[in-house]
Image (cartoon, rainbow, N blue to C red; front, side, top):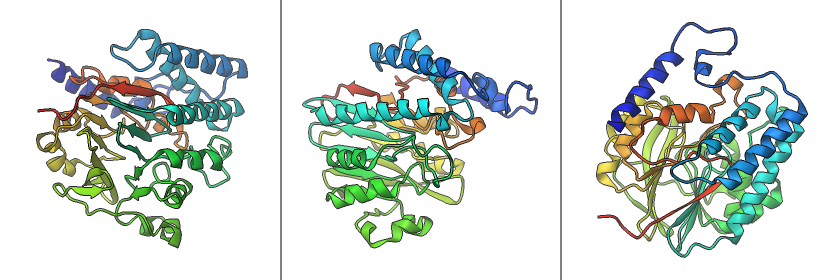
Length: 359
């Protein structure tokens, strides 16, 4: 029954998003599923909204079942971040840097002796720590910029990146887009002797990754069946795509303890469901990290069949507001899901029980 509700909710949402009628209070039909964006707001409202949201999230961390006030706090953050110039606002920039400073300190001080700890960083970035290994996906400093966007201060500094690199054994990059692959982060990891796994063609798609300092990036063969041993991890680099032309690795990672995750990157290609729908039959997946806007999330989830879902890619601040996906839409897409899920803000973490390989 819950699986049917999951599918129905997704279909209804998709039909509304495709509607031609657009009331004047939204920028696109997709925005009918969330609060209308603003062109501006007072500094007092932004400051108090972010402070209240931080307070609520600290009192009500990710857990199941989720409390209503936690969801209200995430949606209030949506309201702030969907002000068109939000990434240029010094209040928002400072708030972002403070969250990233706190989460890095938490990662540095956390030792996992049992189970698994997972942190969500900016956009679709995650850090996974078990007793034996720490790995990360798609870590970037903040919204991508060419230095002329006005949000250059919404980022972490070089010292943060160096400290982060010391905490990670392996980082996997799904595809070349700037909100998933960052040269400074990759360079810091390689300089410290850490392993970076990238998609084939990365150096061709992003010229900066062709520099000699990036020669150490590992490019596993894309395959629906080949399992690569990369350090302590077993990795399958599934041959995904964003749309048709963009190579996007869907990485399945298994730790020595047997904990398995699937990170989709920007996977969004219907033809790839030919193998996506079989992942769960081939592997026991513990956590699915889908991009929140992927096409047909219910079908993807059924195919992967995870124990938990932790979505990502909400509120990419380099996107225009009509395409700045929000938590409200994530909740709509996950409504009725037959799998437990955790909707998380940048800088939050969740501790999951894990007793070893499932039967």
